[in-house]
Image (cartoon, rainbow, N blue to C red; front, top):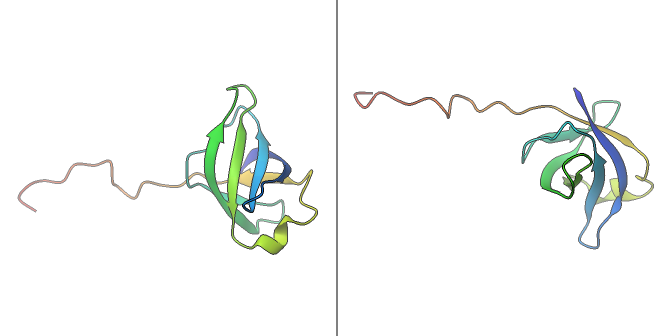
Length: 90
């Protein structure tokens, strides 16, 4: 797992805002806590390149209470061969 950043707070619509590091994740990558429990997925990345802000769509909104300061991690998704071209005869 790669370090994603530190949770800063929540938004009005129930997503979590993370202050990221220079390790920028992909859209839709899963987000985990330090005990490898899935928190949600990366929804949006915005802000400065050196320290971007990342919004995370949370799986369970009950997790949002007391989430400030939590260290979060991510795993890169695989493309499952979608970038490979198929032979037209297949």
